[in-house]
Length: 169
Image (cartoon, rainbow, N blue to C red; front, side):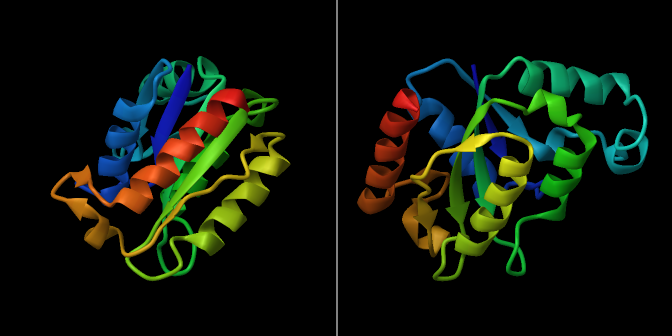
């Protein structure tokens, strides 16, 4: 099972749209975890304790039951969103160990979240997660989409290549 994680809790985000779009492209069994669906107080209630029932259900269904992850990572102020880091910190590291991940970067600017993907790759490596080298960088994301759909041929080609590589990873 692949869990595709929309790396922000911003409502109606491009990350959410790309995660749903990617979910429809993936030929394997997959599901989306949208960080906007996390309990509002998870940072305080679930990070250092046993966790709420709602948070534990999300972790069980979307993290423990997955063997691979695709992280859709938007660039926020030169890094990735704090809610993504808080989520990773709230999940016991053993639930990520020895799994695999792919990353897709989104930005309004020209770098396509290159720096945030590098930062996040380091965190995943620390958690003993292997990261696929193909990391599409979708720069100027607003110009690559028509409403909720990715339409840019280059971007679609990058995602298609990543999907094929991830299947063999």
